[in-house]
Length: 131
Image (cartoon, rainbow, N blue to C red; front, side, top):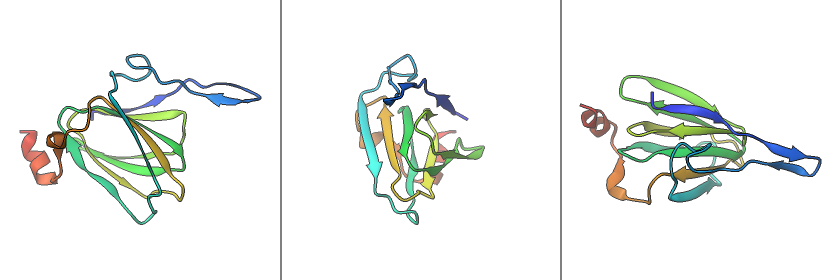
């Protein structure tokens, strides 16, 4: 499975906490795009796609959601619920997001600019692409 949880180093004192994100240091790729998701209701699901070459680092800044990751052979569930632990998703991984908590906010860093041709939006097509 081409994913892993990455603990982030926290710097802080009585004033608060800070986590820095640096390409090729605690982010295992050069990132070209950042986006965030918010106001997803708990009964909604997102994702349902794979990306051919894109790598992503996802952080739950507030709240939680469940990721289902699939490499065509194995499926695993990951609960992302801490701003100091990032989820790295590598190339050719099917991803789904479920069970958003109210107020969940996700920040995503991506290795490439948006390209619709990069997406595989049908699970059967994803499985065929792996062969």
